[in-house]
Image 1 (cartoon, rainbow, N blue to C red):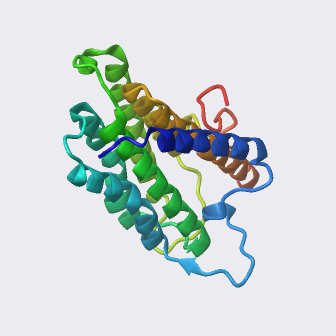
Image 2: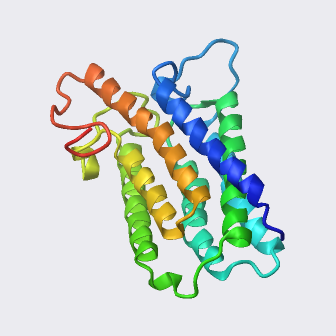
Length: 252
């Protein structure tokens, strides 16, 4: 398949600009799901498990379809795509979504997230399969090795933190509790920190604008959410740990 370089550049710049605009204006609104949900009736709701499954699925299947329809895709690009991006979204689609105990989602939030995952699935898949040009010895490059280490460490943090959050409540419970263990001992948004580390590791391992744009977008969207989670815990629990930060241990 031909590399649509101009489209890839426009999408990448669009992701960065959208993320930065959200970062600047995040005080005006937070995406309405979970503890930050503000409903204006009538609002159609979708069960959390179904919503997560449907919205994450395009980011997994669009790149996989591109691998099947590609003529001689980049070998290194395919390895990176399947070993990082697709691995993350396989876990989100078939593991996280089927085990979450979250609240139902507004349909509009699910549709918006699904649209983003579709765009991003195309951007990452098309770039790595059809546009990326890696040197033959890229797998020996320090950026490749460092990026993969960061990615897998971040993914482990993300999965472990989700496990802690999921097991805070017993089935049927709707109350909030203080998370403990793992990086939650240091930050309120340990799951978000893990995901941000993942995507910056991915960007380093691939060393490209499209992958960096996704990392920046993720930081700008879920970074502020970690801050609002932190503030929520401080307001709700008088005994919330004083030294715990929002997103970056000991700093912020």
